[in-house]
Length: 271
Image (tube, rainbow, N blue to C red; front, side):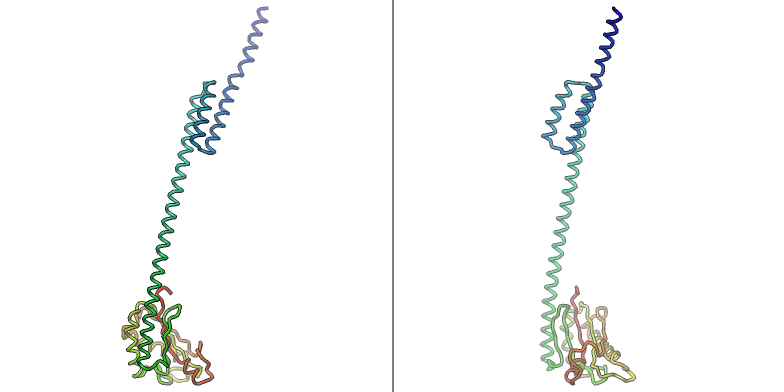
């Protein structure tokens, strides 16, 4: 009888032993749930409420409660620190973007002001050139205009050269000398000098085609203005078109006269 009571007591003791690990497991699961909830959205008010509730639950089962509570608190701090760091990075990035936008806007404003100032200067130089040409009595053989790429000064070959020649006449040098002071005002701008002819073939030993003739005439005008200091030799280039790109029809004498020309293009500095 005594043996049966002892055996019954042992079986009851063994049967109640599972409660302790089961309680620990529930505690750890609850702690894991709180950690996940805290990491998903760090809110100081909610976090404190969760921590208080968790501490109350852990007070019912003190086993490993200290370690679990410290783990939750440390995780919360780490998450808050990471969030703070991310906010700091976003703030720095936003500040940098704003600074770059301000610098870009300032550069655009400065560029616009420079373009306006240059346009005003080119218009003034063009007006002066037009006045000089009119004063010399050559308005019918020369024109000046301000285009999108700069000043276009067109000089008829009739006043620049004798027929079939690329040497400046003595009379035209007097007119060109009057243009020098105004062209000097923009001598830092790039300059293109282009030569054109009509469609009458050039067939001399010196100029076997209109290519050579138009090229030689552009070179002559370039050399003159460079020698007078009106154009910088490092800023100038020439183009030879021959009979191509005519301004008027070559079927009439008046049209051919318009096509025999030299164009001086004083370009914008940003073109």
